[in-house]
Length: 414
Image (cartoon, rainbow, N blue to C red; front, side, top):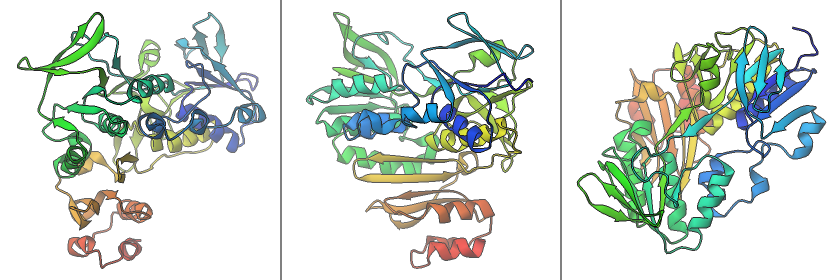
């Protein structure tokens, strides 16, 4: 393609911003355009359910780059503009204002949208989802006065983080979850039970194995949540945290291969020439697992975004990062690294004091570490990741013994 045609990044989130950065770092010196559906410059989303929601972070602190960075690096950000049609054969992208952008290469970083409650009452005033900074600001305003009856539908990461923030404002909080234990799908029953106890100790009414029949309202505003069986939990504020749906519509309409996300190889290339995908929308082939995985967490947008930018610039890229995520709830901080698909159904091996919530959990298959989670134990994530990456056989007894330095085990594995 002619050099005058730009690299076009579709999506103004963290993955898109880091891709622009990665392309420039790799030496790409041509025109570069970011098409952002939001009116704000790219920002980081984890604080929206953590520090920003809790009132401990201001708006400027969550920006990926200061505004001047985009001008300095000659990145043209089109704010409040959405891509409505992708034509891979013509290397063209149509925007919602009728304009058409020709591209040298295009990167789909369209992210995901929050799954909304599909039953009765989902559109009542006082029912919130959490995805954008505007969502977080509106929810913070609803919570900050305290004394509200807050019902959270969903016991995943977003639901529990919102519950912790709501309790921090001295609201009465009920969490309704379908599973028997919160976070079951992410970390299993054993580790999930740690979070269940944590929230109950902080006064959350945690109701698991509970299905929601509908959201009740009065005069157009939420008044309660009806669960299966007919009971109604009174509510002034309802937060729906039941997952997210990848924004694959643009890719599907363009004929790209899509399966639980836009399918790509390990260099983020899709089934269409010169079209790439990254972040929440992408189902990227992982060379270690030998299968595609879609990862919605911050670290994936951060690291994969930069790698995708390098790939757009022409570097040879094989993305093989170990998935990573973290959470902060009350006085508990946690980091998780590993392959959830390999850890599923495996009981974790614990190292440390579970009752004091200062421990590391390891998931092993064939005496090889496939995932690790450190809870209120710090400066160990590099060693955990090294154990996972080397696939070395470890002695479970030594791994569980806090007297054996983890660095020593990781060093032996190397």
